[in-house]
Length: 104
Image 1 (cartoon, one colour):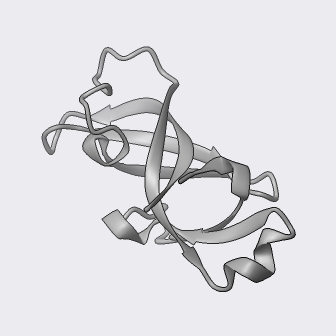
Image 2 (cartoon, rainbow, N blue to C red):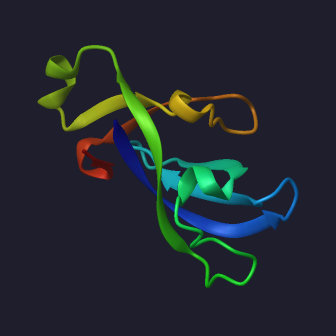
């Protein structure tokens, strides 16, 4: 599964356990997006706490949407953050990002 590079920018709340964080990334068009979800989705080893020194580099699992061969030459790809149900506050889960923002 691919991972999209992001930054955890703040601790939102301690409930539900283990806590909620806000994560941001910038898409291929330069637009900033915010994802808010459980800290364990973005960092599996407990590196995000209320006392962390934000921003912290993290990732979110994603899957490529559409024809990767067609987009590979442009250096961009559309991904979905659906593997863990992560969306923006308005429910968006598909984003066009640069290939170099992804970790394979």
